[in-house]
Amino acid sequence: MDGMNNILAGGSLQISTEALAKIARCAALEIDGVTAVSCAGQKNVRDLLELVSIQQPVSVVIKDGTAEVTIQLMVAFGAKVPVLAEKVQQNVKSAIQNMTGVTVSQVNIIVAGLRAAPAAAAQTEPEKAE
Image 1 (cartoon, rainbow, N blue to C red):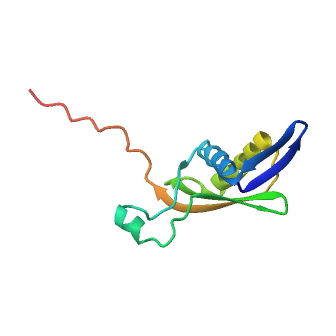
Image 2 (image 1 turned 90 degrees about the vertical axis):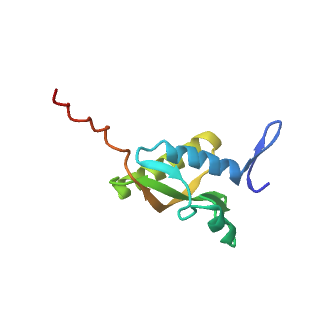
Image 3 (image 1 turned 30 degrees about the horizontal axis):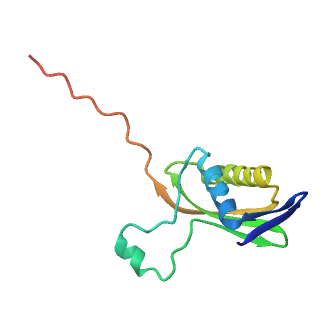
């Protein structure tokens, strides 16, 4: 299990990088404008089969006792990306540190793609003349 180890009074605690990645994913999805935590360009099975290695949308690397998180996001078209990215960074860092005590040195954001805003309200048909 790859992750952080902590000594507890009654034993030890290990937190896997996979668990940290799940926390990061959930924290990123809490931010308005983030439509998905996902790699872009994977539209069909053939595309997936042609990939040499499938890239994970969230990766966590432990270096010098701190976590470095990289997240690939799909964002809503029209979102202010720099503002959104800063909010994601803050939320991910806070969530991991508060839930696990693991220090997060950096959160890297990759905007993998855009998603169209939800369709406008359905257009009403013009009234029929009687």
